[in-house]
Amino acid sequence: MRPAYPAIERIDVDVNTPAKWRDRYTDATIERQNIGESGADVFRIRPGKGQDLFLKSEPLGVLNELPDEIARLRWLNQHGLPAPSVLDTATENHRHWLLMTALPGHDLASATDLAPEQIVGIMATALRTLHQAPVAECPFDHRLDARIAAAQARARAGLVDETNFDEQRQGRTAMDLLQELLSSRPMAADDLVVTHGDACLPNFMADAGEFTGFLDCGRLGISDRFQDLALAARSIDRNLGGPWVAPFFREYGVLPDERRIAFYCLLDEFF
Image (tube, rainbow, N blue to C red):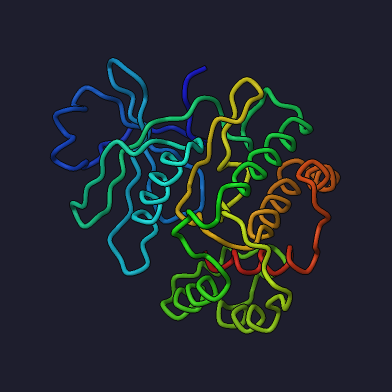
């Protein structure tokens, strides 16, 4: 099966790629990938010969995530965890650029060849595998002190998209949600693991019923496991329906913690 990246619509575009890549891909078709909620642009490169590649680009700014993703992809590759390989990077035209390999298959939100029970099983197994990675070897700190500080910085910088809040929070402001976030922080000690940070179905790939890798890894880091389980449960609810959330937790092997789920979904509104 052709390697894929999550995409709803593919449009041929003229991309002002960094000069060092321009001659290399003169005859390639470059297609914009229109899915996801990050501030980055993603393009599929279809060379005349060879495997498809992906190009990701983000404007330079104080709170960029693409440099973080580059570092995390390299860490995943070094530790034998499946993810796109970084082929090259650049900073040009006031943007960060990442050139990377494609992963086989389709993302779990758009795969049409998988039954819901397969999707739930793949998601649970992939997260369980990632969460077993040695915390001591992960240099990325996404514990709550760091993530709440990042949420505060984004809210104060006006970088939180208030129009994209979950339905129950529509009409509220980022500063309003920030007060709720601070007051609802879990009191119990974190159950720390290496988390993906944005564990939604479109960010997990599968081919022929087998997990093939993680996408959009810019928020990977040490955090409470419910950072991932909360967003996975929300994504399963939205894509497959509420009855599939309980089988997901059973397959993963923990009981759902509704307070933690609510808190980490609230935290996600800032990113």
